[in-house]
Image (cartoon, rainbow, N blue to C red; front, top):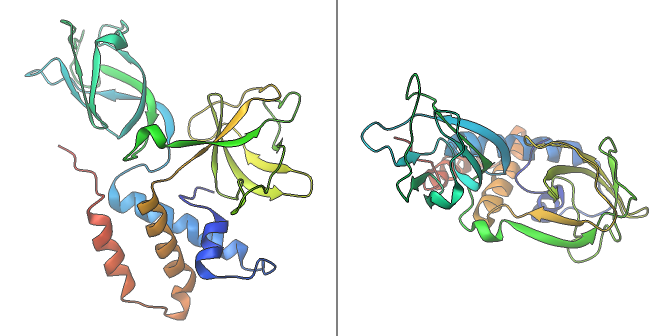
Length: 256
């Protein structure tokens, strides 16, 4: 399951009664399809993932690097000779470009192609500093083992809407987890561990839990597209899809 917004958000968008849960599987399927369609049409990854991407050196500008994806957090850069580039020498000009300073430059041993390895958290977000929101809750397990698929919290449904929802991407230390079920009676979340390229690890009690904030315009588009997928078998508003595609055009990633 990979969704850009939550099951609760879609249910609220449609106006379903809280007690009516029979449609949840179809709703989640529509959310997944909508999320995949939006990422495909924009050419962007819209929820963070951690990996190392290889980049080509521009022989006409050995101090600049055009990134293969939108960069949310830079973690390290390995030069073409295998040495680490000091991040103090790196200026991130945008989520798609960075530049070396202080005389540093990109080099290679055999070929400029795929010579530079950039490790980071990758995703498009117009406001990177607000991409993660503290949940106000913490790990209650003592500890949460690296193989556990249930996470105990202090209050699973605090707030309006509830702070934890199916489909959310959580962050505990350096691990990402996805919520697949919420049991408010036991304050337990069923989670997928080590998702989006991260590694499942043990977490001590009282460690903070953060929630990824998908950009609001993406959430809105996902809800509209998911509603179209959900009702499409009933020929619901067949004119909506071209409108959604036109809206997505402004979010499309430009590559060179």
